[in-house]
Length: 284
Image (cartoon, rainbow, N blue to C red; front, top):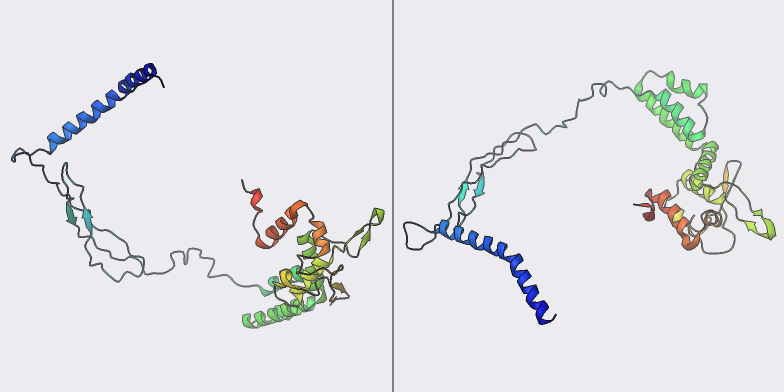
């Protein structure tokens, strides 16, 4: 910046800042006059204390106690003062309510509900084995008049359904839909290429459920992760290729189904299926 430009900039700065400086000086003068005491020689008036607001509060537990601590407050310092005023209130914290659920009894129909174990059996049978219950199974519950006996009979029927081979078949169908797979055995494609078994991952997941295995086996099992299922029976088997196994995560068919560059689709599949959250790249 040369000398001429420097002078021009200096005049512009002072012209721009002059009104603001004048306001600041005027404000300071006003404050000084207000702070002067007419009864002293140049002394500043002390801050005028303001009483604090009364203490208030509402108890959240049973209304049996009364607060004993008074409310406290602090007033702002007066012009020129250095010590804020203080005050005390007389508020009490008397609890209200009896601690009961405020929503209890809001729906008058809740207390009058009755469990229909016959309807429950119908729903459970459709979901677990894909078929309606037989007449004998319905009568095994419907002929009972005691609710406790109906509940016991219903629980016994559920145990029977879980041991039914149709439950295993239903589970395989469920996991096929979940994994978006389905085609058993290896298929030979053009140019001699083969497509791996796309069914073994669903079969293994169904085996984990039916045989009450640890859920973590889906991700950590090192053997038997490519079983087969026939005539209501699971037969253990290892995946082809001899590569290390890690549950369904290393299943050749599942990995082929979700193949992509940098394993994007595989990671997304695992997160959305088992963590039940969207893949981070999909958040806006």
